[in-house]
Every structure is written in structure tokens, then in C-alpha cells.
Length: 386
Image (spheres, rainbow, N blue to C red):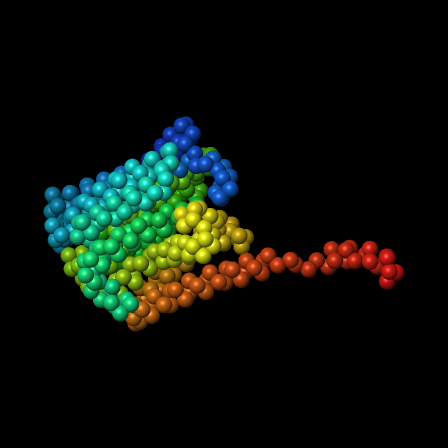
């Protein structure tokens, strides 16, 4: 019965997305609300960027309706400590609404990064206010329980980092929605395993809407192949959703789920690719004395495109890497310490990026053209009668 409670909202999210997103596309084309084209952007055609407008209404409505029906009809016991868990979801919805409004304003008229950064800090503070914060590192860095005066700032920092990491990965068709969809699917199954049903419900609803959006973002409508971007409205709210789910899984709180030795590593495995990539990009900007928030083309998907991969191939490679990290880390925490798993992740990430740099350098080397070299040498042959 609990699985049915998850499957029905998941399917409804897909159907609502398939119904609502084409109407959003119709409005954006009629009102000509397109994503601007510039030298940094990969696309060279007019494409609207308001697809993320569909996410928050579907997430919040399906989540609220399902929870109310479960409690009113009382046909299944989800074993939830109401007063401990519900404030977290209430603050989640408040934060999503704030980011939703900010994202729409940014997609339509533009919002400076300073104002967006302030809004992100405000919504990040809502989670500790509801009682959700990282209170245990499970031996990571040889630290276990941490006091609230360290856990709350750490939580705020991670929420802001995750929101921006997801936002910056929205550079290829299907990349952001694919990464978040994989992350929500993995976290949803983990929450099901630990019988954290409401968290699993949120994860599967988000996965459902992202499946519909992925289709329209990558393939477009069936008639004219018109596609749509999610914009900051979608990427910021998805980042906030992922931050909520990962921190919920990481927190040592029996009202959410039982104690899990590798909770932090497992949870943040779903975010390794976007978080590691944004850390690498910010480090390069700092090293080259560039503005930390200035857009550039140093992200992982740009590097794969420079190697000659197509947009879809680069997207599939990155999503596959994220999925591999998730599966491998879930298995390794059973037999290895959290510190060793983290060191291995960092090592593999560095090796992967170094391999890309080596391949790119090899590709840029001028290749010897026998015919061209012979033609260049002919004048010398004639001059000196060789």
C-alpha cells in the first residue's frame, strides 16, 4: 500500500507535466519570451526558458494532496512523527515559493546575482529554523556529532552551494533535469528502504515531473520540435529540493530515518558531479584572478563539447558518471570508511578531469599532413635543384 502511495503521485506528476508544459511553451512563443543568445550560450536558436514554472505547483500540490488524503482516509500508517517532520516540509514549501518568484523575475527581466545570493541565504536559513540541519558527519574527517553553532552555518553554506551547483549545470539540454532526476530517484529508493515515506514521496513526485520536462527539453514537441529550457525558476527550486532531500538523509534524526553509518557520503553522492564541478570552476576563476560569479565556458559539459562530443553524448556521459558515483558509493560505504570513500571520489574526479585535459591537448596538436608538407617543400627543391 505504501508503494501505491508513491506510484500514483509519480504517474500524476508525469501526466501533469506532459499536459502543462506544452501550454507554457505556447504562451512563451506567443509572447516571445525567449532565452537570449550570446557567445557563451550553446544554443543558436530562439528557445523559451520558462519550463521550470511547472515544477513547484506540481510538487507542492501533489505532495499536499497526497499527505492530506493519507491522513484523512487513514488507510495506511506511514509511521511519521507529525510534529517533528511537518515543520520541515512547511519551510521547504515557503523556501520554494520564494525561489519560484525570484526565478520568474530573473527569467523575465533579470535579477542581479547579489540579490539572488541574498534570497538563497534567506531560504537556506529556513531549513535550520524548522529543525533540519546537519548534526552528524558520521566520522567524515574523524568528526561525528557537531554542535548546532557549527551545524547550522554548515547547512546554510551547503544549501547555497547546492542551489548554485544545480543552477550552473543547466547548460545542456537534459543535463540539469537528468542529474536531478537520477539524484531524486536514488534518494527516493533509499528513503523507501528506510521507510521515510513522505521524503520518498517528494523525491518521486520530482522525478515524475522531470521525466516529462526531459522529453520536451531534449526532443521537443512532436509537431514542430519546439523545445523549452527550465530557466532559473526551475534550476533554483530543483537545487533547493535536492538540498532538502540530501540534508534530510544526512541528518541523524530517528523521526526521519534510522541511523545510517554512511549517510553523508551516500546522500551527497547524488551531487558529486555538480558540486565538484562548481568547486573546480570557482577555483580556476580564483586562480586566474577572475570574478568568481562571472559566467564562462569552463564547466564539464563545455570541456566535453570541446572534445568533439555531441550535445546528447556529453549529456549522457555526465549523467552516467553521476549514476556510477551513486551506485559505487552506496556499495562501498558498506565495506569502507567514509573518509576512504571520499578520498577515492576526489581522486577519481581529478583523474577524470586530467584525462579530459590530456585528450584535449592531444586533439589540439597539429597533425602531420604528408601532402601539405611536400607542397611546401617544392619551392626549395626547385631553387636548389634537389
